[in-house]
Amino acid sequence: MSAQRAPEQIGIEQTTEVDTDALLTALQDEDCRAIVEAVEDEALSASELAEECDLPTSTTYRKLDTLTDAALLDERLRLSSSGSHEREYVAGHVDLTISVGSGATVDVEAETNAADQLRAHSMAD
Image 1 (cartoon, one colour):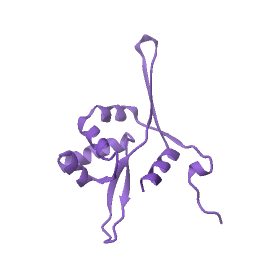
Image 2: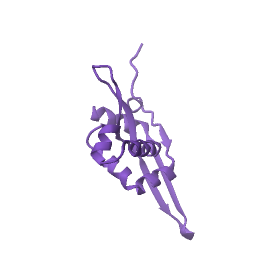
Image 3: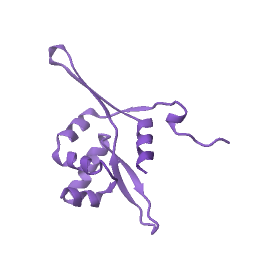
């Protein structure tokens, strides 16, 4: 029986479309941008983010929901030897394409790539 391999190791590129409205809404929000900047170098829990960004905990959780829906943050479990595990957040990876066409039409496409996310998470650990 062979070991399970990550998608990029076996040549599978899986992309997931992102809710572009959620993405653009999150990018416009100052608190959301502060949270994304805070997790740029390290994974942080909701309570750590609330303290780091000087936000109420309830606001932090709402912003985290918005950011994970927009794929700007990924959620993972922080394991503790004491058995009290907690969720932590890391920067997500989104490919964003904005096209401006004739007649003032704007097309926005956003997607995440599973292989990119696996590579980023393995480098962060």
